Amino acid sequence: MPSLAVIGSQWGDEGKGKIIDYLDEEADLIVRFQGGNNAGHTIVVGDKVFKLHGLPSGVVRPGKLAVIGNGTVVNIEELLQEIEQVESVGGSIEGLRISDRAALIMNYHKKLDGAEEKYRGNKPVGTTKKGIGPAYQDKIARIGFRAGDLLEEDTLKEKISLLIPYKKDLMNMLGAEGCSCTNESLLEKMTGWGEKIGKYICDTGVLINEALDEGKKVMLEGAQGAMLDIDHGTYPYVTSSSTVGGGICSGSGIAPNRLTGCLGVVKAYTTRVGEGPFVTELHGEEEEILQKKGGEFGVTTGRGRRCGWLDLVVVNHAKTLCGFTSLAITKLDVLNDYETLPVCTEYEIDGKRTKYFPGSIKNLEKAKPIYTELKGWKGWDDTEALVKGGYDALPDEMKTYIEFIEKNTGVPADLISVGADRDQTINRKADWWN
Ligand code: IMP
Image (tube, rainbow, N blue to C red; front, side):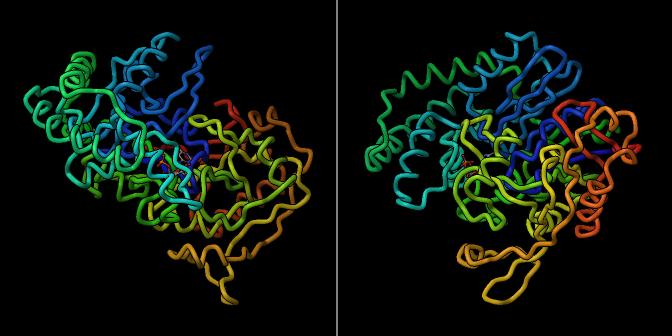
């Protein structure tokens, strides 16, 4: 029953899409277990370019099942647009399966997302405005729609008549842009969604567990990153789902003892989108250089990502929460032009050193990074040598950087990525499924 989870060890955008695409060839099922279309990655298959947000990356691979698990939030209207886009470039979504328990993102969630941000005054979270938080709020408050409701007209009618007056009042109260729908028009719309997408809705927990029973390979695709976790991230500057190890089980319906491997994706430096503390953040020209070199602009929002040095306090926090068995280190090529590379291993807060990530935002804001300066591999850009020579052909300084990460986390860096293409990857592990 091999399963392999792939989780971002920072604040998202670590390059999970490329890594999943590299490893999912052998997988039979690829499962999204949390988040929604706040995620975004671009997958290139031959001459086809797929821009995915809510769809699992496996959807572009023929013959595989691509599962949207129960722990996710799904905007059906936007999912239908995404499906159209995939089909327009020659992709097929035959393998798509959506959990009947997945929570739905409604139009009013998007409107409330914007309105709630306004109420946070000068401390907004900087959300993607996709309605993620409000949709999870309704799930937890037990007043949300689930994908399975689309198959039951009575349930839809019942929920619409209870929820719509409430949501309209709420939007009025918060000064959100109004919603012109009536109970009847919403019922018609949602029934239409059921007709279009109903054949993909099922009990995905059963599907995944049966696949594991049969010895099939299940890949669990994390979205965002460990530091955006609702419990363990930089709260309140986080997303609203469980992005760490525990979220895999609750969000897909499998037991913890069915997880066999967890790959942590570590970008060779750090980025984050939106607000919130960022101890190793660079500023001004230094940040701009890294942002441009790394192409650090969001796929979902187009926003420029904040950039800084590698922070191993962050990566170790993620490791503890996810139980990484391997690391994939990405975007090492972006650091080609530096003489020295600072790597943060501890924080100093009020004169005291710590290697543990603090829960208090106030403490994080005071934290100063303690850096070890490593020598850069300035001028090295020979990816051809990489393809031919593998790990041994890497410049010594890059190997030292990688080994420093391994030593400080205690986890082997089994995948090394030095470019967006599949062949710009070094695989140091013979079998990912055992
Ligand atoms: P939300 O998920 O839209 O509620 O946004 C909450 C926070 O998570 C914001 O700071 C977003 O920028 C961040 N966020 C959400 N999804 C992603 C992602 O896929 N990559 C990076 N940051 C994200």
